[in-house]
Image (cartoon, rainbow, N blue to C red; front, side):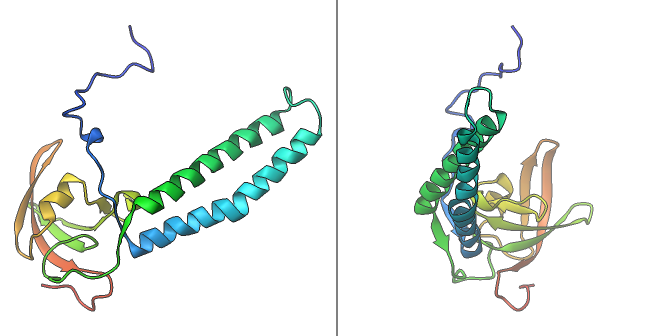
Length: 182
């Protein structure tokens, strides 16, 4: 039987999605999450609550699309506020440089060169800060795990869907450092 809700079965013991995520976050990432939480709590929730109240005052709620839509939106905002509140309590903020800035650790900007000479620039951040446009990867990602503890000119191997890919670390830097370590 086929359908949109059918997925292939995965063994929970081997499913990478079931592995626990690290609770690390940079100070900037924590500040961004707090700003989102503050905006949702102080601005968005009261505004949507007012819209729900106005729509409810119009009478019959069962046929009031404005009421239904805004009520669902209010529930989404409340759920997001609850999630962010809980998540911020769980997170461990990393707000200082590592003792050895010549090695790759959490928060590092890393410049890599692949076999064909193409440069790749990325940053290792927490799960809540991933940004594919900026090339910020999670510390739980296979690439980040391969990079941790390595130094400039070290070679790493990462298993990708296209096979193994080899990289050489060309630079490591941390926020607040004047120049990359080379």
